[in-house]
Amino acid sequence: MTRDGTGRVARSAWYLALGLIFPLACGCGGGKGNVSGTVTVDGKPLPMGVIVFTPDKGSPISAEILDGKFSALGVQTGNVKVSLDLSSLKLIAEQEARKNSAGGGMAKFGKGPDAVKQKSMNPPKGTEMPAKAKEQFAQLEKTGTEAKQRSEDALLLLKQIPDKYLDPNSSGWTLQVSQGDNSFDAKVTK
Image (tube, rainbow, N blue to C red):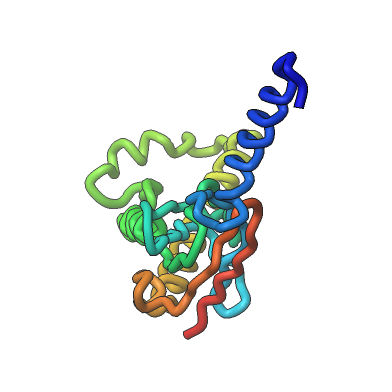
């Protein structure tokens, strides 16, 4: 070792490196990992919802499911229980079902309490609705039909998902999360 202080600098750098590497090597660093994957119900992608990662120690982390895919950032490393939160899907499906059962905002012309307003929207006899207006009206009907179908599909899908998947203690899904990127595919079966 030299007397000019370079030995002290080298030794300090060595201790610093050892201090950073040791917690990683022993697994006691309390790190975080990222988890991405898919959620399917009988092989079909879950259109929307939330997947929840509940570690043995630390706070749960959730990620949005969109078209069957998710990506969760900052999940505590170690043993993690996994569950679904479908409250948003249920709420949307119920709202759509209510809206659609109430006529979907598209009342029939000349019927119901708004008959006077509706009759005034009818073109006078002998005139034809412009092509552009017909096209827009057809698109509105199509959109309403598609929304109704989506809400019916969502409600049907919700009924197929057993309640056990909504609780981290009964889902049966566990994952050992390590630092870095992890993969998890949640397969819902009836």
